[in-house]
Image (tube, rainbow over all chains, first blue to last red; front, top):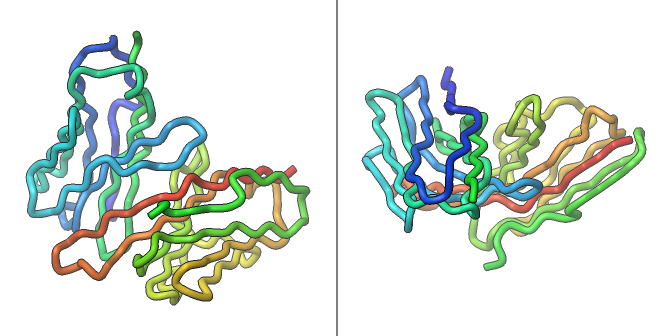
Amino acid sequence: KQEVTQIPAALSVPEGENLVLNCSFTDSAIYNLQWFRQDPGKGLTSLLLIQSSQREQTSGRLNASLDKSSGRSTLYIAASQPGDSATYLCAVRRSNYQLIWGAGTKLIIKP
Amino acid sequence: DAGVIQSPRHEVTEMGQEVTLRCKPISGHNSLFWYRQTMMRGLELLIYFNNNVPIDDSGMPEDRFSAKMPNASFSTLKIQPSEPRDSAVYFCASSSLRDRGTGNTEAFFGQGTRLTVV
């Protein structure tokens, strides 16, 4: 059974710091992995999608990596800003439609 | 495209009443998902449609829940009768599985409907 874990559950860092969010999964047989952002009371915004054959994806200050063999993905945020404060969720696609979700990391960037 | 559109954004109803949530997926997407999010259980997949056909409804909690997709541009999730424990945020998401050859199955979410049953 695929399980997705995100550690830490919450993280608070000063503005300007680079930071890494972690996502681990138990079954390496995945189609892809997707990182989402959720602001309080809002929907989920897709940030990055990494296919199972890829090692990383970049979008602006965000870089996501994928290591299937070790069952890990990281989301790197460079030069963090208060506007980055949100909950970040990772989800792995284990079949053509099933997304298995982590519980999320609540990130607070202090001005 | 305006993205996945859900209505209403907020719904407050009394226990026992019928609730209908609506979703318009992204045009051209052939897969639609209904999720429920609570603090206790996180995101749970309720039902998945592909080409308007329900493929997996194993996540639907009880017979009080039903979902339909009469056409490619509209879906409803109905709760009848509603109960306080149904209070949650309900999300609709869509994706395109036509590109399965390239593996591009990114999911796009609506803003959600916050349901409160009192």
